[in-house]
Image (cartoon, rainbow, N blue to C red):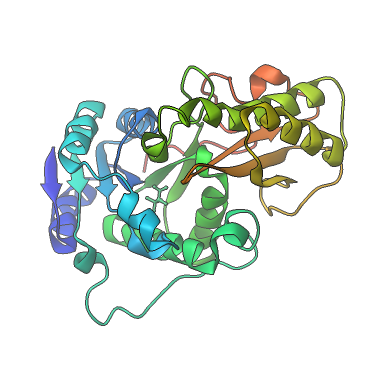
Length: 307
Ligand code: PAF
C-alpha cells in the first residue's frame, strides 16, 4: 500500500490506473478504523481493481471544537488495518492540503440536511461533509465510492450532491456492522467509558423494539416511536431525536405503508451516538433491525465498480 499526502501525488498515482482502464473504488474515512470501515474496504477490494482509502479528520464537519479534539486519531494503526483489508492507496492529507489558505468555497445541500442530524448539529455539519466529500470525489475520481449505512442521512446527502453536480461516479451504501450486543460499530464507541458502554445498547434496543412491533402488524408511526423510546428507558438513555421518515426525502411519515427509515441519536455521557434501521411493513421482523447480519440496503440497486 502506498501512502500519499498531496492531492497532486494522489492524481499522479491514479492517472495511469484510469488510463489502463482499471476501476477505482474510494472509501472515505476519518480514521479510527473499525470493522465497519474494514467491511467497506474489503467490499471495494472485491469489486474494484484499485482501492483508495482516504483518512482525513475533517474539521469543517465538527460543530463543537471539543468534539474535534476528542476524535480518536491513530494513523499508523489505521494504515496497517487498511492495508490488511486490501487498500492499495492511503490518502492521508494534512488539513492545509484540503483547506489551503484562501479556501472560500463550500457545498451545501438543501432539504435533506435540515432534519435529524442537521437539526441537532446545525447547518455547518452537512456543509462540512458535503464540501469534503465533493473534494475527495473530485480528487480521486473513483468509479464508485463506498459509505456505511450507519450514517443514513449522510448517504442521502451524498447521493443528492452527486446527482445535482453530475459527478460521474456511483455511490454505494453498505449495511451497518454491529458488535455482538447490537451496538453499531463507530469510531466514537472508543470514547465510551466502561460504565457507559453497556448503556449504548439503548440504541439497538430501540430499533429492535420498533421492528418487533412492525412485525406484529403495527403501522402507526406514533406507536412505533413510543415503543422505541420506551425500550431505551431501562438504560437511562433519552433520544436526542427519534424519527420515522421516508428513506430518500427524510420527510416524517405518519403511517408505515412502504419502506421507512427509523433514525435516532442519543448522548451517553459526553459521547453522541447515532443508529438507524430500515423498516418495511411486509419484510420487517425483529431480526431485520439491529441484530441482523449484514444485508444489502433494501431498495437501492448495488453499483458495481466495473467501468
Ligand atoms: O463518515 C465519515 O467518516 C465522514 O463523514 C466522511 C464521509 C469521511 C467525510 O469526512
